[in-house]
Image 1 (cartoon, rainbow, N blue to C red):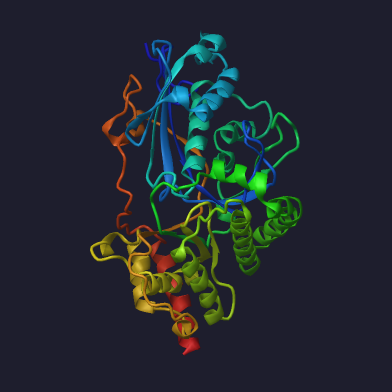
Image 2 (cartoon, helix red, strand yellow; image 1 turned 135 degrees about the vertical axis):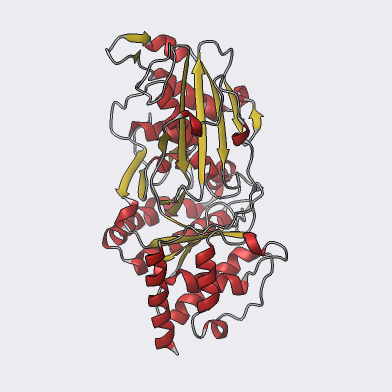
Length: 455
C-alpha cells in the first residue's frame, strides 16, 4: 500500500520514490570564471548573483527512483540523453547516493534501508521554459533542480550548512547559487575537497522588492564556446584572469555586498557593469580570444550608458554572462522608460511583435511614456530591427523548491516522460502578470512626474 504523508510529502511505495522540483536561473553580478579543480568545480574566485523569478525562467525536474529500474535514464526537453556519457550527472548521482538515508514511515519504522535506497536507479525528466545553453544560466537552474530533487528522493540530510549547494556545484559551478533566492554569494573556499566552496544567502528577494530585470535575448541558440571550455582556456592563457581573481574580485565582493545591504542602486549598477566589462576583457585576453558578445550586445551597452547620461544618474546596469544576451537591472519606476528605449532601438522583426515582450502592461506603459528627454541626441543608433529576438521582463525570486502533489510531475508512475515534459517554444508569450495594479499606477505616476519635470 502507498504510505500516506511520507517524508517526501507525497504518496510513495517502497519500490518507487518520486520528487518534483523547480529551480530558477541566476545571473552573476560578480562573475565566476576559472577553476582550480575541474572535477569538483572549485573556482579561482568568489562570485555573487541575483536569482531570477521562477515565474519567468525556471527548470522543472521530476526524479523517480525504483529498485525495479535497470539503469539510470534522463530526458531533457523531451529528448533522452545518454547518462553513461554525462560525467557531470554521474558525479552528482554518486555524491547524492553516498548520503542516502533510511526511508521510514510515520512510526519511525524503516521501509527501505539506506544501502538499498542508494542502490535504486533513477529516471530523471527535466525541462526548461527558456532557451538551453544560450547564455541564460540553464545549466545552473538544471543542476540545482537535479541535486535538490535527488536529495529528496534519496533522503539526504545536510551534515553542515549549505552542503546541498556543494552537490549542485559538482554538476555546474553556478548551480550552487540557484538553491537560494534573492542575492547569493558563492564563497570560493580553500579546502581541497570543496567542503567550504558553497553558496551563502546574502539577502532575500524581499530585501529589495523594486529591483527589476529586463533580459534581452539576442540569440537563443547554443553558444559556440561552452563556459567549461572557455574557462579552461582562460586559466591557461590569460594574464588578466589571475589579476582579476586575486585583486579585483575580492574587493568587488565586499563593495557589492555593501551596495546590496544599503540598497544603493547607483553603486550596485556601476559595480555590475564594471564586473561584466572585466569578465569579457578576460575573455578577449584569452588565446585564442573568446567573443561571447556581439554587435547587438555592444549596442545595448552603449544604449545603457546613454540612458544614464540622459537621466543624469545611474538608472540602469547591464551584465552579460558567457553569451550575447543582455541582462539589464533597474528600479521598477524606471523600467517603462528603459523598455521604451529597447523598443525604439531594437524593435521586433515583422511578425514577432505580439511575443516580443512577456509583460503586456509594461509594454503598454513603455509605449505611452516613451524615452527620457535627450536620449536620441545622445544615442543616434538607427533601429536594429530583429537584433533582439524577445525580451523577458522579470524580477528577483526564491530559490529551488519542491512542488507538492503528483499533478505537477513531469513523469508517470514508472518515471517516464509525460506530454507536459515536451520542449517549449523559445519565444515568450504575452502575459498580464507584472506588478499589481496599484504598483503599475504608482510606477506610472512616478515616471510621469519625472517626464513632466524634464520637459
